Length: 311
Ligand SMILES: NC(=O)c1ccc[n+]([C@@H]2O[C@H](COP(=O)([O-])OP(=O)(O)OC[C@H]3O[C@@H](n4cnc5c(N)ncnc54)[C@H](O)[C@@H]3O)[C@@H](O)[C@H]2O)c1
Image 1 (cartoon, rainbow, N blue to C red):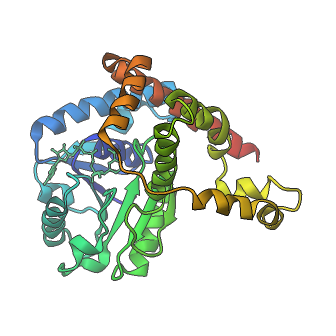
Image 2: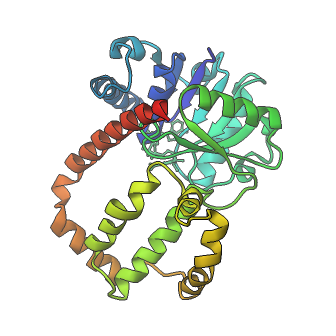
């Protein structure tokens, strides 16, 4: 099994540690802040118990936990690592600094992947000697419950590195996709931004309440989206498949899109939206609701795993 280094142990780093450890890999976990490392090891310990209770892992949580070790330095974390997943702060300076250090310390065969949500790998790896072993592996929060990972190489990432990263993520149960060319927001956040932009416009222009827009996705679009994407959805929504759908609805979809435009997140609209949300869910209940969301995600993960066995 490949040895994994997880650098930065916030929300994302701690979840990656669980992804790799539950699949049998030895994981070295490092954070520049020793307090964060200690706190997140405790979070991991609890979360592994939840995963077992939900039926997502079969192995005893303590056995999985034992594969995760706290590294005392970046050098220590990278010692013997085959793959490093970086999860430090989301700034260009932070990414440049940590990648320069990782490239200097890691042995030549180690793949260096970043969890960055927004920064293309080319902007922080260009000057590195080992730039061909660097790429973005962008997860969805939290990656131990949501398996998609967007692999986005820079123009100089080697094909072999991309293939090895893809094989590793598949082997640990993640669902990798390849972003063929660098683009801001990769694929997932661009799709999410398009939906959010339209939701905001419909709300700002008074077409529906925030609650009703949320219901439209939760009890409408989202039901199909949890097991098929937009292209498969339309392929099944016309008797003759996708081409038939395009012939029937292509023009009207185009007309709707022509009336959609980028919207600024104006303060008064955000304040109104936030008031609606806080009336539905007081700020003091946010953490409880996040825990509820994670339990729902666990149940959905189990359901999807069972369902995919039957297909
Ligand atoms: N939170 C999300 O929803 C989400 C989703 C996908 C990707 N990401 C990406 O994952 C990365 C981490 O995000 P997060 O939400 O986990 O952040 P976070 O603030 O929860 O955690 C960052 C951690 O990195 C540590 N750190 C900072 N500098 C460091 C360094 N030089 N060396 C080692 N450790 C260092 C911090 O102490 C902290 O514990 C970011 O690039 C972010 O864009 C976040």
